[in-house]
Length: 502
Image (cartoon, rainbow, N blue to C red; front, side, top):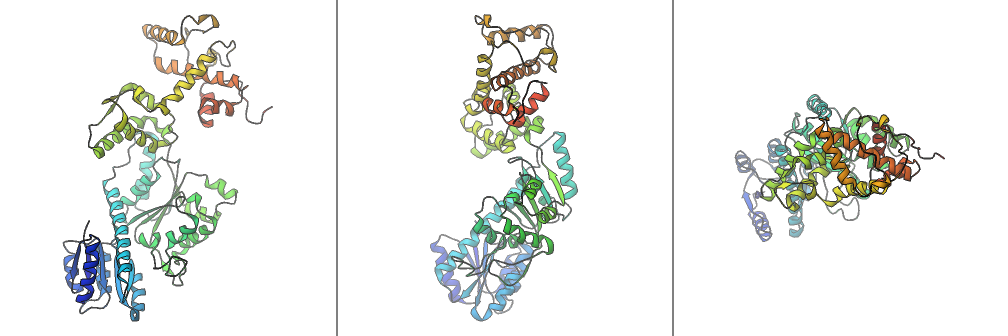
């Protein structure tokens, strides 16, 4: 961590702050005037800068202006006498993190510097994530469309609404839009509106004045001020409380806002990128989201495909995440076998790319060998397959299939009909025999053909068990409603009842 710079022409102030911060194991560097600090900024920078407002020569406000031009995300604390409150307001308008009124309580001063350090470290981490983050991985046509959209939008200041399922990479797209924009040298600030309690969200967004509410002992900058000149990413915007939507609408409309408890309007020079996994149109119809705010946000909509829509990207994503996880842990990179890759590519991944990344982290830590097979994967991924097998075995003796081979999109002329008198031969052995016969006869795409027949057999058994009700069948099979609907259409399964049918 970089040192805390203290700039003051008063020897006693510098000495007191140096000793207090040393007790907190914080490194300091002191300057007796602003000019020396400005010169030092040519070759180095602090983690936090604390400066008096009135000094011989250049003032603290002049120093603040230089700092913000070179390091816009650097927190600057301005020390001022009570008679300089007008100057303190000017300091805030110039981008100061906070002001410290003299004479000050030493413990409160240290606490304030600590808070500024936390803010600075968050900014540094965010910048590193942007600079170190790889370009978004994806070879699927749906992702190529996303890449083209990022290229077109990155040079624009227009508000963007990113939609897509949870875990599909919406924040990564927002960071890419910022990284390739003219604002890339300014802060990227992200806020998940669903993760902040309603009572604190307004202060988190817009900041608050000292004494605005119980516990507001100091003035605090909100995310709009922290993102000044850069990009503010509002994730899960669909969960924003209705009354706060009005305040956000005003900022998007005229660029002005007030801190909580404040009376001085502040101007926001921020590009807003919003994201949601929810259907905002439906929330508007339900009265949960303001229609005028929806239209303000929905200037350009960028939809991210789910991982199910880009399964051809699963192998390259898995290799990337396994390499990343191994690097973080300092271990050798594990490799997925072809069978394991094929199996992973067949999964639904409701958690999308985030779920795949978590899985690769698990594999790096928990898988026993360097070459990972299907059996080495977490049990919660393979138990779905086991449950389907169990359902299939339970229903092998059913007499009348819901789907015939002539209705199937694949033609397999010699698949065995498993009857109740075949218990002497297990279905595993019969499947192996069938696969061997197909391979010997030169059948194309053997695993695809057998997989479709297997899926159709299991789904029709479940539908028979639920008397054709697909929602109930999906629950019993442990798959999603959309999945079973798609499978029924793909496999041309008949006899399905919609929810509410008698």
